[in-house]
Image (tube, rainbow, N blue to C red; front, side, top):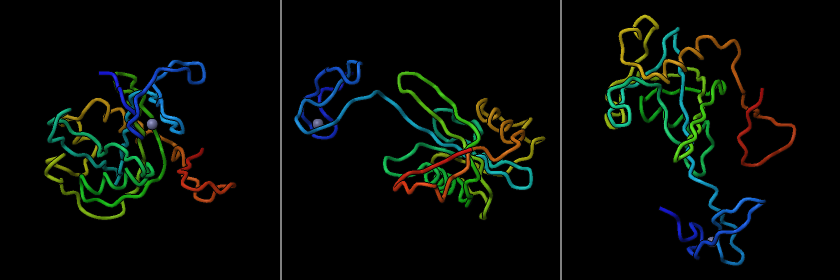
Length: 187
Ligand SMILES: [Zn+2]
């Protein structure tokens, strides 16, 4: 279904040239809305505690019954590392801090999804499932994972976490240039 009206001001959209590409854009003067496409951004957490990884069992589709790492979707006005902290806390009750970004998955489909995986340090709390999105949660060792129904992508992420030599992209908390509102990660 094609969009007809501006999501910012409600005026009709028109098709016009935006930097060399024909795109749906707002027809109202003074409104800068452009429909760039359909995108979603996911965040995921690899929380390790004494060599065990925090996993949850999905209680909803997609992937119902599969064990995955905790995660979710970012919010409009939330920094991504705040999103992942919140998702881990909501799904499992565990407090964890971001160490770095260790993997990115690109999935261009009807809704183009980009997924950012964080390595996180365990801070506190025992895993308790939220009972809505997930119905089980816990820390599991590599041997235990063998007999569990772990989602393929999560298996890949666990391999990344185990074999990473560095911390990945690290948050720059004191950037050279003050950039308000930016979340900055760098090698
Ligand atoms: Zn508009």
